Image 1 (tube, rainbow, N blue to C red):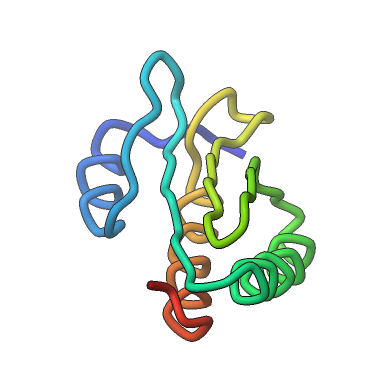
Image 2: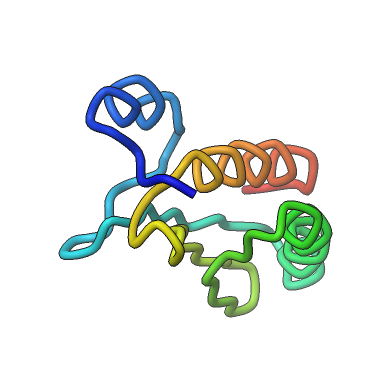
Length: 100
């Protein structure tokens, strides 16, 4: 897995809504907010199935209706196309899971 090139970053990262770079690390992060713990947990369960199929697992933290996510590809020592794809899939899942 290759790290994103500068041109890939310029093309792909602006299309990720609400994702920001992590300071001091080649990673992206986003906070998802849901109305309830059940919605947040349901989102995480759906993402877990996608992540397992992709063999690409997020770093995440959940408290009640919030899920904080960080994506980076450890094998690439930074961002890769897998991170962009998983971010897009997570956004699609969140939209259907009742994100507040």
